Amino acid sequence: MTYLLGDGDEISPKYVGPRRLMEVAVATLATDRALLLLGVPGTAKTWVSEHLAAAISGDSTLLVQGTAGTAEEAIRYGWNYARLLAEGPSRAALVPSPVMRAMADGRIARVEELTRVPSDVQDTLITILSEKTLPIPELSDEVQATKGFNIIATANDRDRGVNELSSALRRRFNTVVLPVPATADEEVEIVTRRVASLGRSLELPEMPAAVDEIRRVVTIFRELRGGLTEDGRTKLKSPSGTLSTAEAISVVTNGMVLATHFGDGELRADDVAAGIHGAVVKDPAADPAIWLEYLETVVRERDGWRDFYRAARDAG
Ligand SMILES: Nc1ncnc2c1ncn2[C@@H]1O[C@H](COP(=O)(O)OP(=O)(O)OP(=O)(O)O)[C@@H](O)[C@H]1O
Ligand SMILES: [Mg+2]
Image 1 (cartoon, rainbow, N blue to C red):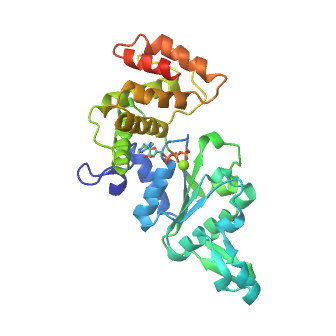
Image 2 (image 1 turned 180 degrees about the horizontal axis):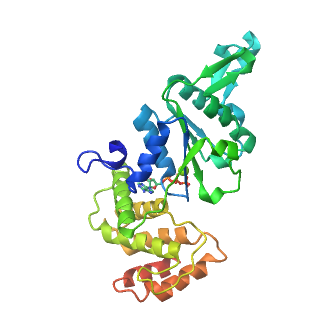
Image 3 (image 1 turned 90 degrees about the vertical axis):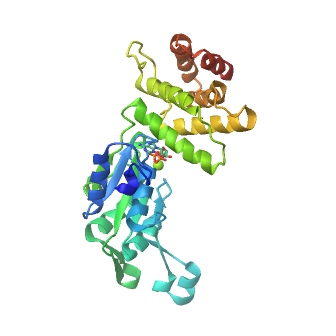
């Protein structure tokens, strides 16, 4: 928990949000049920799953990336065909999946985007989670899960219905829904932290005045996402994109790269305007009108936003 939420001193928080959710997540992993992190895109599902696995078993790399093409072998095991043909089925010819390795070593395995995996493949997880064994019928053998084994899966709210989890599988998971940040201040904190750390890894110079620009990006994202201005007075149409915190982070990071390499080293309205336009306008038919209406009715009138209004009009 300290690694995940920080200690307010030396250890920086990785997740910013309700402490209780992380307590439930950690407690779940201590039981025989697996953990499903659910939420709209960009709510740190992957991020939290990675950090939980790293904190608990010192390894976040036992990962199955779920796609429509994920096959049973990715969750159970495959074969080294050259060896299989030469020597017949043996343990040496077997290629374990990340899940199988996690079972053997007593670690956390991760399954990303579980609902994109075809239903019959999803169901291979049922035996693993309920019996804690992985049968290998070809060798009349099985792998037993060692203490410490568990699974963290993530799934996206927007994919709901793609391959909805069967109720048998759902019962083996405890679901924790990760929310979008509750307040603008919280979201500004998340973006500021992540941008600072991304900036360091991109070797960007410090940009002290960036916080005003970050607040503006977060305000725009929150207003369009919620369909209402901050003061609660004007109703807005929401564009088709999700406008997640993750996208706010990349808009600001992109802006900082522009400011460093092509600007005067300070993050300015025109450095973020192009990125925001790209984040908002995802559907070329409906979104441009929504964005233009927002610019004309909200941005244009707002005190101190003249520079952004002009930059956004140019970017569009
Ligand atoms: N509450 C939060 N605390 C800390 N970081 C956050 C938070 N919300 C979002 N982020 C940041 O957003 C970025 C993207 O998060 P992540 O990729 O985990 O999203 P996701 O929920 O897995 O999205 P997707 O559904 O698209 O896979 C990460 O860099 C993460 O640091
Ligand atoms: Mg993810």
